[in-house]
Image 1 (tube, one colour):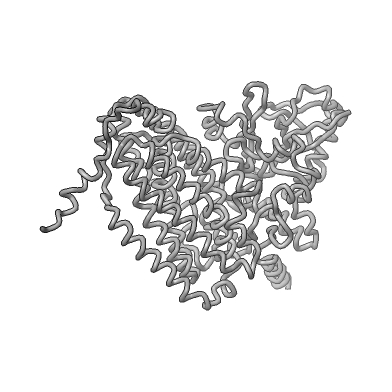
Image 2 (cartoon, one colour; image 1 turned 60 degrees about the vertical axis):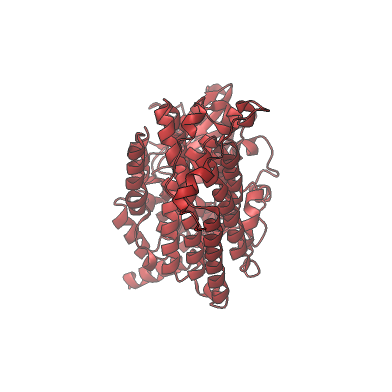
Length: 500
Length: 84
């Protein structure tokens, strides 16, 4: 007997809803876990998505993907990538693996929630594969950096970071816990798969794979490409839900979830991806500035997706576009200045040539960010390295958990966005982060930022040593300038030549 | 006298910083404490200028000899330190 064509049986096989008789529907799908908003079951059953992958296909393709990525790694283990790569590129790898690998495991629980509690059968089917994807992403992104641990302890943070109270991980965990592990299936689909994955990571991983190839790191390039192909599939889970929500009068709810997801994803992007693209990637390998990348690949694509699905641009869109000009510069300067508090070595990226590039890409950079870097550079040239380190903590935002910063210099635009809630003062970096808090204050009110913890006496002793201990940063792991200040010596030589 | 944390926003700097001061400190002392974490690290000194403290969102600076305890600043409230 001939096999049926896939499309002849796919819909039937995916139709896995039934009428429960031993329990009520709300017991089978608790509203808090499904996030169903009272929308009736027949509406969920109309869910459809474009990929229509079958489980046998999934297993075969995933096996091929793994075989490809692992065999490239095995073939290139003797390639001396680690020894030959620019230190800035190694910092990209360390920051990426530490912030992402364990978050991928966490994402598998988010996918599992959709696979179990999503009321739409097609969504459950997609999320089952998404769950397996994320387990794979966790495992492969822990295994790949492990080969470097013996040479460089900072690579151990691929596994270690998520179990610590290091500040960048507090930020990462706060965001991922918010959108992945503490919400119902529909919210996860909208915030994680639509806002974060469709909007940001799917495209960013394409860019990162291209950057890796440009840097000669074929192992990482293949790894990220392999991960991205999974992302592009399971990121489709959220889109079809938007249509169901809008048809059933829940546009405002969908818009809010998407807006929170976009804003939160943007903040994490500004501290991770922005510095990587505009400062860590060696100048000769930069194809686009972070802003150009965001405008071409994220903004345009996102605007189209939102409008196509019947949503509106988020209320903060203009502010978001404005922040593309400055937010990641501040995140970078903060990470570099507080460099002992990260598990990678930030590349300053402010040699004369790099500053010329920054000025070209961000007109006015020298008159703003450049003024702060001028002081830092002069201190290093004068042998006053101690002044290139902090003696206090930056105040971090009670939503994104990142330093509250903005444009310095004569155009000084830094400000706090404070809020009193039930007798406690909260500080935010922006109207966007404050708005996220106001949407569900009880959800966030109990969380203590690193500064709140410091003031509560949870960091002892109350100095840098105590801070590093609290953040589990051991000797050999704390960050320092990626190029060991070689850029300062280059500036010194250039200035001496000019003077002569 | 007691430890009193403020949030420092120093003119020309890029980031808000934790500023531990004492309730007995005058506003000039608060400005000097804030400068320790900004001036000469990321902000160039401006000889001949005086640093004044004001509450974020206001134009008028606190009197220079006013003590923190005499102001109505709240713990961790954001102050702006500006050159005059």
